[in-house]
Length: 111
Picture 1 (cartoon, rainbow, N blue to C red):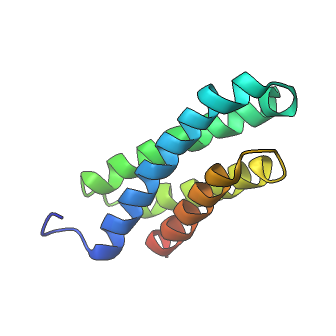
Picture 2: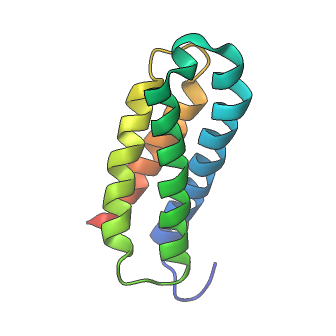
């Protein structure tokens, strides 16, 4: 951990990274393979949106941007929406957990 980062920020960065990778891999390795509701356009879009905003939040924190609180607040909202979209679909428990963990961490950073 770098000296300028708090443990809370490092934990948030880790959660963002994990959520980014989880959403991307679940989209390509699970949802598109299973099809049906898993491959519905709105579901795929929110998963890709979530992956992207997590990567963006991570970037803002890593470079010490003063705007990271704003981006983390948006990230939390999108992660919650992604978790809700994944909830109830077979095999999506890991994605729901990653999104909720990231949302919790980002909400702390946004406060």
